[in-house]
Length: 315
Image 1 (cartoon, rainbow, N blue to C red):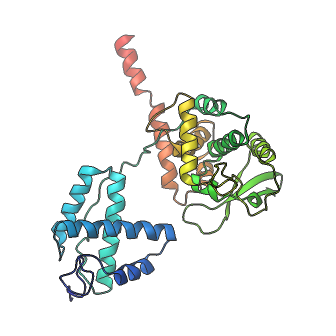
Image 2: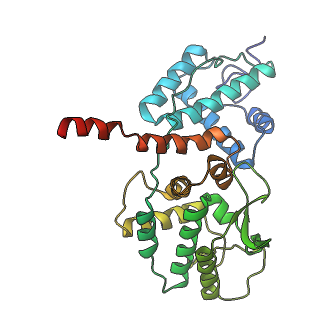
Image 3: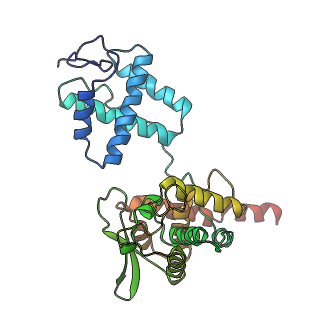
C-alpha cells in the first residue's frame, strides 16, 4: 500500500504540507452515511485530529500517535466526549485503508469506557410539578415555556424534536390527539406521541395567546425574542428555558438539564407501571438495551440490601 498518496498533515499531495486537503475532506464527507449534522460532527472531529498532528509536527502518523492522542483527550475530557472523537478517527482511518490511501493505524484501538448509566438525573413527580408551578403563565412566552416543558416531561421528546415540530404535526389519530415528530437519525416525522389532556390544553392556551394566523407549516413553538419573533426556536434556547425553570424551582445542578426531562418521562412511566416495551416505544429507542438502562437503575434503587444491613446494625 502506498502510504505517501496523502500525508495527513498535507494541504497538497506531498509530505511537506500543513493541513488535510479539502478534496480529501470532501470525499470523506460523501462516504459518511448519516445526516448533515452527523457529517458535520465527524468532519469537525477529524479536523481536530488533523490540527493536533500539525501542532505536534507529525506528518506520517502511526498507531502510537493515535494512542497518544487518545490519552491526551482522556486527560482533558469526559469519557463520552473522548469516545466521540475516537469514533471519528477510527472511521476515518478505516476509510483511508479502504481507499488504499493510508493504512488503518487506528484498528482495534479502544476508546474511553463510557458508563452505561445516564449522566443526567431525572426529576421526581413532585419536582416536575414544582418546575411547572415556577413558570409565569401570564405572558405568551410563559405559556409557551409551560407547554414545552409539560410536553417534554410527559413524552420524553428531545429538544430537537420540539423545535422541528410544526402546527400541522398536531393531528387526530382515532380518539387521541397526537404530535408527529422527527426522531433521532430520521429524516421524516414518522413517529408520534400522544398528547395528554393537560398538555393539549397548555398548547392551546399558548396558541391563543400567541395570536395571529400562522400557517400549518410554521413552528408549533415560536421564538418570542425581538430579533426573530415568530421564527423557529433553537435547541439552545429551549435548554436555557428548561435550565431557568429548574433554577426557579430551586433545582439548580449540573446533572439537571433539558435532557433530564426525557429521563423523567421514562422513569416516572416505569415507576407507575409501564412495561419496558412501552417505555421503549415512548422514547423511540430502536434498541431495547438502551431502554434497559432505566430498568436497571430502578432495580438498583429498589434493592433492599442497605435497609436490611441497617436494620441488623441499628435495630
